[in-house]
Length: 474
Image 1 (cartoon, rainbow, N blue to C red):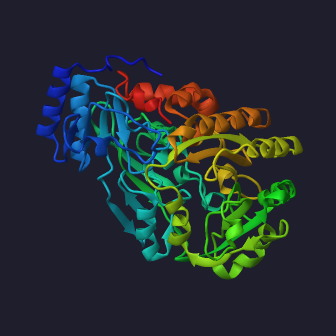
Image 2: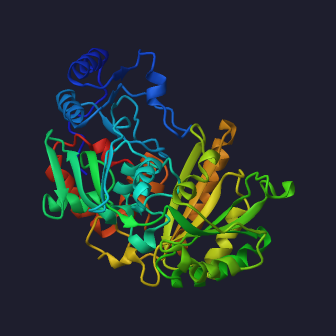
Image 3: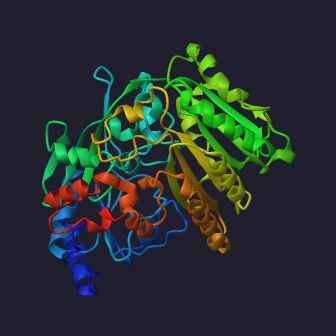
């Protein structure tokens, strides 16, 4: 990575001058430390994050972004970039930084005939799905509706549809962004092709993205789902069966297994509420009439406590856990990629899960590879995303509400991640890589053999390191 050439904490006079210049240049509001809306503007979804930026420049369009970048080049503050999502690591709002806030840029234009969508960076997946589902179309997104389109896509983009349609970044046709020189550029396979390569899984710090153009696929508005809860005491047997079945299912199924606790549901007996259990789920990315045979193996991994598999609106599936993770919840997430789940790996996973400190915390096994999956179908060097060959991703997600549990929750996630390391490929998913500082230290694991090429591209488009703080962020 280039050195932080001139990025600095501004003194009071320089900070005030920067704010005044921004206010004279932007159509959107600029929120400084002493403004009434400052605390709300600096707050992110993750209640664990409490950062105090120098100013928040809430951009209302590409012209505002150009001006914010121009002012940043003049004053050389640390720069962080905020999209529309939940920001687990909080890297969008850094101490003493100029936050280029894109959360108000919410435009979505769907071209149903061309099966494309042009999406601004403040959009969440729920907002995008709402527009595309009007036409029975979708592009692969995350697993909750409050996930931001920008952050998920730039890091790769795992989700319910990945084995059928690929990762979010695989469905990009072009990206418009403002680079460090203040120029508005379009990156695609035919324009700025190296930059386009980097934007597909290379994370942040390549510029300020002002829109994404996605390819869309026929899906919905109703989809068939598998949603099964197995007893926790059967977890070992269920995981053993899952590891054999999941990669061999057709690519229209992207199975997921989660060790979690049963949320209160009036349709379930009260004694099951918050009891540990094994959740197995999938969305069928094809015609509902063809779903039963493909999903049946996931519904027979053992004797279920409950099987609530059904045909439901896709937008409902994407938002079903939103209310369990409201703004202000505390969160810390780490992950590994794995080629297989050996008996020893499963035993280690369950031993660590036994110490899970809060009922909202979870361990998730996502299936990426296997029979005819679209993820490895993309060549290993065709994008900056470096983990095409992995069969599984295992994420360790600590979620809690009480500050007194901070050390226990974070400690559990870290110790579980450490214990699972011997069974991993050594790769780490940038969007599940812990804190900003931890992610910076894991860059070889995140980007693998692509790291050197990625840094060359960053240097080409940002030779003075204007976006270095963003490039270090998960």
